Length: 314
Ligand code: BDR
Ligand code: CA
Image (tube, rainbow, N blue to C red; front, side, top):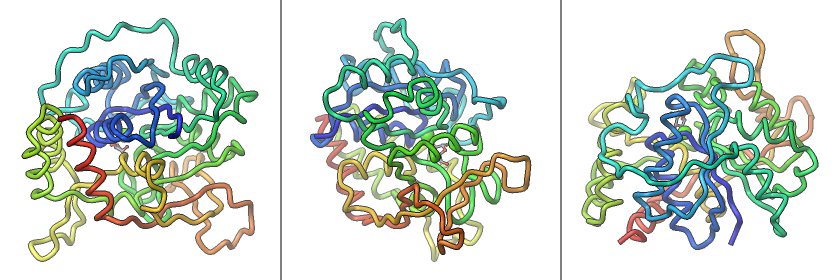
């Protein structure tokens, strides 16, 4: 089993990512930290707590991270995730007590005290991870890997060339890819292929437990707000994109993905490509291959992992 801390901004797809991390016997989830992204930090924090309560995992410590990106104003994705950040489902109120330490301090404490290396998974903007790397460089060697959802070799979703998580805090992403720590990137190249369809949502609902019903409700909502390619029609049914679970699924079963080491840089200057990940696909720069970039996944395995996750909570 891998020791893991999940930094997330729930978020519909973050919710499934969190449940996967809780349910997998390959992961020992040590803590959850929350980032500002899909919604304001107050809301993503409450959402994480409510999801932990839903999953009967209130023993897992949860800490709030930074209120805004390192150098920019926060941009949220309420058009996709709604007013609460996880619209569409009724989640239980959470009685989890607030910790008196920040996400940064919690990550540092856990790494310092852990004998084994710890994997950091990030499914929101990389603000908290960057703050941790800057403030605790001596603990870098305790990080096994940073697996994050964000970026793209080809394309974008918040601008033509930038993916949301990286665009929200490009300076943070820049710090992460330059950190020297092993990094794996699950960008749109692979996450747009991690699709669930209406019949999958139905199958999830039919599992019949509270998590199943809640997740199906969340996915029904996400299904309405997910942007589809302009060419999708009745001959090409595009599912909903399960971006964030990819970064967790890789830690559970790396063989599910095709990844290649490549040089990745982040565009932080005010340009048309602000917030894009510049992935050197053809190795034209001959620079250090600092990131494992994911391009493909075995969708059947991904679907099975999703169903196993939901059934775990029965
Ligand atoms: C990413 O943006 C968020 O809306 C999702 O939760 C995911 O982390 C996809 O671009
Ligand atoms: Ca997210």
